Image (cartoon, rainbow, N blue to C red; front, side, top):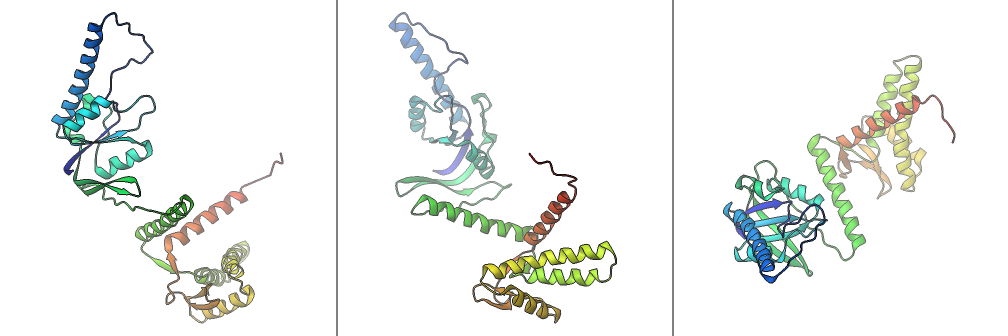
Length: 298
């Protein structure tokens, strides 16, 4: 479909029904023919109203109460050369509306051309007997979105691939929100811990103790990293502290090689937003624990 005008509908195009259960008694064939004729005329009027707005693609939301589209409406849309996509899930519907710049239409009376989305081309492709609808050239000035198609041999591998892709996108989002990178491998934690201890020496009383305790808690992160990598934590962290005190702030733990190295040269880095979020959440959680006056055992 070229130069598509897309409509998102949330109403059904089928024979009308009442809100409550009713029984219609038809006494003769003439009344039956009249009823069927009026139903067809009503559906045709719906289709003509949609066609008059310039719409040539309809995306219909899945309905749990009744069928979203009757067979006669499907036939009429085919004759009018209107593409029809039925039974779209509710959670996907709002995402499609934002991506295409459409306004969901809840009733045929509110169907108008200003609620349609514009797409340069819509095509349907088959991947292993599964149909995929591809939208190319979406004319939405507010939001620019892209779709990544993930394929796998089984469901479990597909879910794992989706989680990995989600983690990668979260990293990109963190970098975009705060465009700074810091060294990984425990280098950042050791450097912050040393700075806090140095500042704690200038304080007295409980303030000095708090700074030293917070610095010690940061050293647990590279300590745990060494244990998970099968290294000697005490030796590794002592050497890291020595390097950092001599001004080599980028020295960290390379768990793959089992040695200390320059984290920037070895491309072991992480977004700054991740580290600041960890600090904020851990401090807030510690404050909540300190506010607990007593524990009630049940």
